[in-house]
Image 1: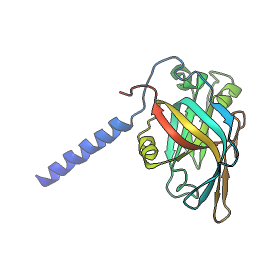
Image 2: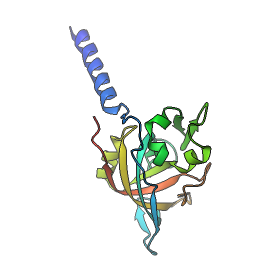
Image 3: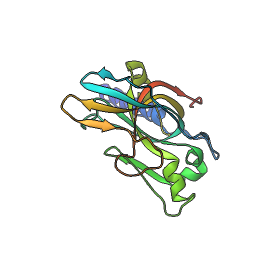
Image 4: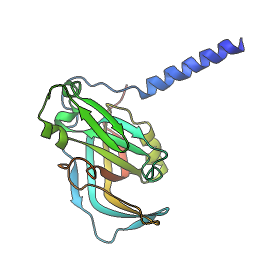
Length: 199
């Protein structure tokens, strides 16, 4: 009897985990039309976060669709940025386009591949990005923990440089036009919200 109860419990937990983390579908159409907004940061705003000195480089706002997410616990920046989100806007938020693009994340990079381009390569590169998220507080961290692929969200905060006490440094890209190493955004997230109800 106990064994049967244990099996049922495990199955129920597995089903609940799948249900709460399953991708969100919107159907065809652009769901996040606007490009990220960026403004120069005010000088002398450097502050401390644990063993890191945080320097805001630019104010930043992005409304985008979540293309993928990856959590990090053991790499050198995991205590600062525990979550990466690959985000898409404009054509890269359109499900009818995304169904032709294979997307994955690994080792702090975002990868995509196609068998045939549904939109030009440059459009894919300039309308999506991998963003390393630095939660400003535990409330933001807990909210980001529940983010699912397909959701449309808004992030507000700063693009930053982080200097650790041992000399290690991590700096955000300041443009959406670059690719490869150093092209990801390092985002201090002060405000987060979902822009649609996820079922």
